[in-house]
Length: 345
Ligand SMILES: [Fe+2]
Image 1 (tube, helix red, strand yellow):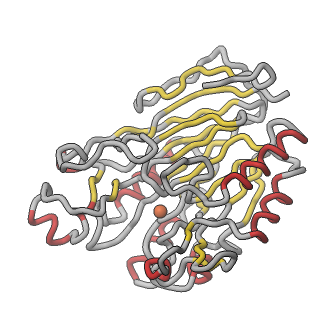
Image 2 (image 1 turned 135 degrees about the vertical axis):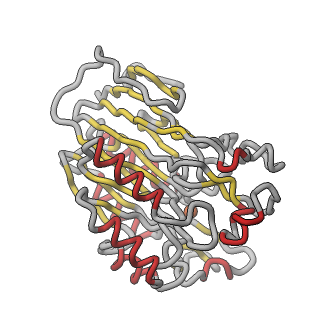
Image 3 (image 1 turned 90 degrees about the vertical axis):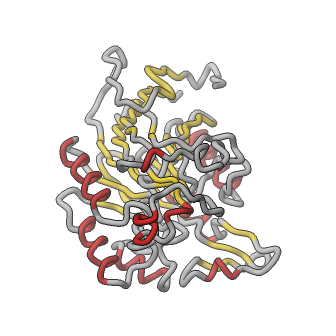
């Protein structure tokens, strides 16, 4: 971790084990914190993936309630389309919960329908939008665009991105949205939390194609007013990782449910596979993963993660899969905890 003299960081616990940790009482706090339940890539898909009932979502909502969260946010790939009665009921469960729940589009949320239909079901004005809450600005970006030819951006919908032509590129923020991001962030009266399904910081692991342009917007905003962009959060690759870049915390949030592999294994019980036909492409978690994010106006950010076990005791290694991805991030059934305070000057 490289720290400049101007950008000083106090770390109470970084990359701590997944068990919940206590906040360091010596870390100064001021103002009222905002408490958010964060979870990602639930991939509700009845009859296909692991943990295909509403039970995981219900457990995450129960945690948000017992932690008295101000809001919840899911980081995309909540499910695989919004039209079936089961999908509608699942969305309703979350949307009508007593704690306000926000959505982000993942690459799969509109697999079975036009993307605007998913926006409507998710109560989103568009794939990208923003809102202010508790003294923070939440900026939701939408990199679910691909290009079959340079400069022609097509939004994911109806599974169209599975039929991309050779030489196509994927995970773009189109120019108009880039300009919207800039105008929403630079000069924001509130500290900004930027959220998207795909990552703005990863190397080889399927990052947003024009992530450098997005990072330049963050630097521009923070040069103008330090501490404007504080936290950048993504899902998508089902990995648990924290990174500090340009005095911003980048949080790669693990899936609530499983890791996906292109090649099938043969380790799950035959009876289970009969009713979960895609589960041999999954290494599932036994219990859902979620995190409670608490943010203070003064720069303190606390994450209380969670820890589970492998479903049926089967790890990636047991199934013959690599344990790390192309960026060296390890598949684990956990979301790590941390508590750190950034200084902005
Ligand atoms: Fe995804």
